[in-house]
Image (tube, rainbow, N blue to C red):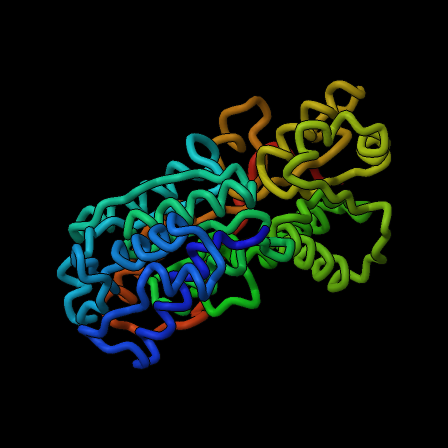
Length: 356
């Protein structure tokens, strides 16, 4: 996805300011000069200048032009609003994560502006651009489609180059030096798989989400558990799905056949585990008598929807608290580029697994 032209203009001018080429009090290029330099409309130039004004880098003086502000005044004009961008909002583990973030921010005099992408990259770009225009002071972001190359690299580079404090939660983009707070997803996949192995299962199906980096990490843990127990890997024992295909995942005949011919299954998360149990009933299988099922995240879905599901814990509220504290540390002057904080998960045993 191509970055908006006004963001290019703002990014270029901000680089000149941070490099010292433009100093506090210097007049920046006129609208006419920027129009000629970037071959854009007057409105596009004005949007770029407005973005710089919102970030406290530039001030516009009527009839005179736009000037670089003193960087020391940036804190004084900060609006103390943090942008929190997650993939989903009102169910599963997200209310607890968001609650953890909000509790820390409010205790420290910050407000939270919340938005949800539904794991759509275009929606993510729109949200981040809108928040930048409003002068958000920092970001806590769960990146969309983190298992794939990001179409929004330019926006993230803009955040880095302009030193806008940013934290990734849950997922992350591996080639960006942005701190990340999450769970050790590889260990989560390992613990779920090892539990099935310890209960005598060797023909274990793995269902993983490929467009989020958590799914790839959980798959890596699955492989590690198989290897440690000297269980041969089989291609037909792994099913991949995407954000768009999840509503139809268990309508696929190949998935139904795979469930019929396995004794255990590790699912990407509890929602998939619950759908797996529903599908098993439809094809005449009993959980756990015929099929043992393990989920990941230890969400309310694992406890309140029929058969209690064995699941690997997710830190939820603790993750939100840690992310907010880390962001406030950066706002306070701490330097932590690319630093990762991962919580150690543990298994919560319930009724969905049976000794084979």
